[in-house]
Amino acid sequence: MANRLLLLIALLCLAENVKSHDTDHIIVPDSIVDTSSQILSDNTSGDIETDGITAATSIRYHYNDSVIVPRKRPFKAALEVFGLNIGIWAFDRYVLQGDYARISLNTMESNLKNGFVWDNDGFATNLFSHPYAGGLYMVSARANGLNFYESMPYAIGGSLMWEFFMENEPAAINDLISTSIGGFALGESMYRLSDLIIDSRATGWERFGREFLATAISPMTGLNRILNGEAWKRRNFKGRAFGNIPAKVLVRTSYKAITNNTGVFDDVSNSLFVDASLYYGDPFAKENEKPYDYISFEAGFNLISDRQPLISNINAIGMLWGKNIELKKETREMVLGIFQHFDYYDSYADDGTNHFFRIAEAAA
Image (tube, rainbow, N blue to C red):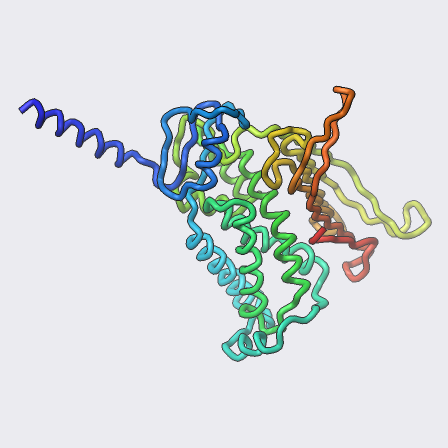
């Protein structure tokens, strides 16, 4: 009788453990994420929730909070990229009534036969809208547990799908380049910067504000948090994907006047300019082992302007690889690295047909 009672209690405990088990994430708790648990986070595809600190001989990461690593869901990520393209196409076709969005099986077949061309679409379309779309593809994969390199094919695949099947215009090789490579930079930046805002301990208006801001920075992060319930799930830790990463934010506002004439007050374009700079991580930290462990990001906006575009500039620099160089003087630091750049500058000289300057590099 006693054995049966003990067996019943054991079964009940097992059932409760399965019931409370988190099927969407791997949770690495307490204050240390070491080499062993990092391998667990990167390579484990099952549903695992640790309940202690994994022992290791070499401690490489030290956080003050638990880290959540989303379970790898490659097919869900691909479905999101597909749905994103369908949604953008539907908006272009039925809301904007764009001629380029009038597609059929004939246009798809024609695009496949003709191959790539070099198009001359608008500056903002080619060098901001396309990289931003690539960033959404990238985050669709990152938010579903894939690492940086595993997410790259989703940005490339999403761009290929759009170029060949979602427009009646020939596929453009320059669009593929800017969407894919620019998407790597913007996507990883959006994903990591939005993670700084997330705090699953917050409630009420603070929680709403954090989730709203995180979604504004990275829409696909917010969408996935809504789909898996993390947007309103209450935890006793922040629930971020990268732990406590050092970050510095600088926001500046100013009056900006631009003119292309010699007279000081002749033909002046006026705007209320807001510039935000964010420095994520430490470029000299020895723990930098993953792409974009260090990011320098800057965005400028013309909030109130008579003729200037809303987005004035976006600049992102991400460290893909870095190696610390030991110097004799301890007060000096040096790092040898490979960095990815994304730069975008835009301005208008008159009603929008002429420009003071327009410079962009989506792949550098």
